Length: 393
Ligand SMILES: Cc1ncc(COP(=O)(O)O)c(C=O)c1O
Image (cartoon, rainbow, N blue to C red; front, side, top):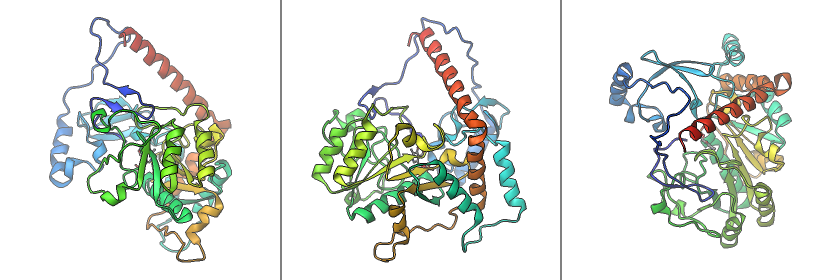
């Protein structure tokens, strides 16, 4: 998720973040190559697209300055229409764990297309069964799974499922968490301090929508609390019948806010005490920290878990998994309890094949991809620290 940043924002651990101003007195030791200032061909395309698309782009989160039209991507690099090549640190908000157009994944996609496979719209496929099996085998929190097309669809279904199971309507979300664009969760992300007021603990913040068009009645069902603040979760549980708490196990949409020791375990205990459904939104953490989700690394089992992004290295698919007795509510024998899960494109063969190949590749040679990622991340962190120290920041 990308938002144009307000001047000061309240993050999940209560830290106030202000934009950094460079200290002009110290020259960095690392050579920084200036980015080009003009993108004439990109500007032309934006002008054209704006005539037909509001804002000129298909996801308004991509409406950022400078306006650049990208044409090609491979591995760590992307190219723009004006011929500039970039290292892609942004990486499309997280899917490309193997880099752009990983050949192994691309081959799997081609082979599905060559087999004249299609969206049949009836029955099941061997591919979706294969993907389900491999995920259930490697993700302890997923005893069974369903497939959707985006992270937002999957978090929406997880919350609906939790409400059906608990027969309660209220949910808890994290201040500074992002779980998608739908009414339950499109709130309280980079909330300016003058809007949200002082840190509340134990307590809850007002629902601050990040979209217009969310009914007031709906907003009353959503309670935003600080991340890393078990007391506030308990405070809300004592006031309202809570169906679910949804959180990223590491907040990754306002920079990085890690869970404090014992926090995720504490959420598990509170879920058991107050009988709410604990949902880990692993759309960003999933498959990027290791196979099995961050829940596995932390040793905490949510009731439901959601994956997207890196699971298919950039192809559109999302996964909702969880305890079998909960997931079975999608096929509940009592139709008044059954939760509707439908979608024309769910488990389309192209992203399904991409996901199988991505997981296969991530598992190869004892998970060497993750070792490489650790090395790269460490060298990135060390390099950034050097630059920041040189700039006296
Ligand atoms: C943690 C998290 N959950 C859910 C979503 C929504 O996923 P999508 O954009 O695929 O709908 C995002 C997207 O950035 C995310 O970061």
